[in-house]
Length: 71
Image (tube, rainbow, N blue to C red; front, side):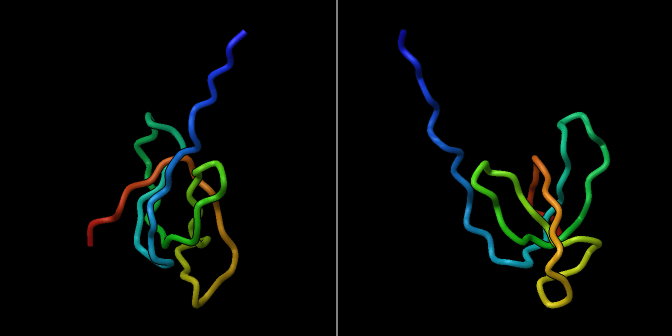
């Protein structure tokens, strides 16, 4: 039996505190605006909780989907 393993998801290089929009599922209309913290090894994005930045919090929350926020 041949098992094909897909390569790990490539994550872009984002600066900490970059403004992003995040959400969990494609069908979700509700997107949360936040400041980028990091990606985990599975490719999920983490933002600082409650609209904070790296200067005001170390608490983060993870999401499945993201895109850059337009100012």
